[in-house]
Every structure is written in structure tokens, then in C-alpha cells.
Length: 98
Image 1: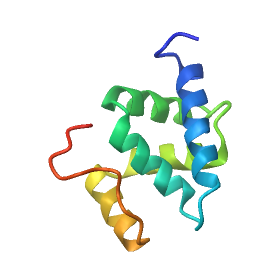
Image 2: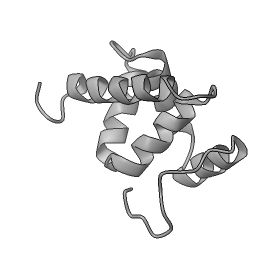
Image 3: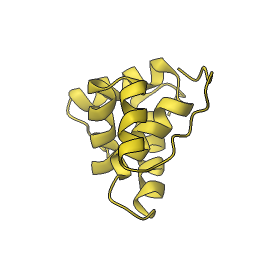
Image 4: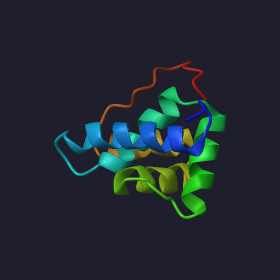
């Protein structure tokens, strides 16, 4: 797997989704999307969304749902959704993670 390959992105997204699936609450996809917004580059997020749109081969359900959230929402809208779900965002003011 090369670092930018869809297989690598799917693997990483599924690991993140598996972690958030163990957390209380039912906002795993939202938490995954927030994490990807905080720590992945815009190019990585675009590639994951493109992979999801092309059939999402290998993506776990929460990772697929997170890709859908990323496709449809800006980081600010994800922050608002996290606040509405009473979940702290992983980002700090001025964070330039993308």
C-alpha cells in the first residue's frame, strides 16, 4: 500500500471508525468526520470522499458515513454538529489542520 493509496486511506479511516465505535453515544460517524477534519490533509479527505463516491469498497459503515458528512459539510458545520451532540471538537481556535 502506498501512503496515498485508497487502500491506505480506507485502512486508516476504518481504524478511526473502530475506535469511535467503542465510545459512548451514537455519533461515531460525526466523531470520525471531526477527527478527519482535524488531522487529515484536505487532499486525504478529498481522496476518501472520492473513494466513497466510487463505491466505498472496504469502508466500514461509520467511515462511509463520515465520508458523506465530509462531502456535505464544512469544518465549521461539523463543529456545530459536534456542539449540538455535546461532543467537544478536536480542533482549537486557529488550528490550521485543513
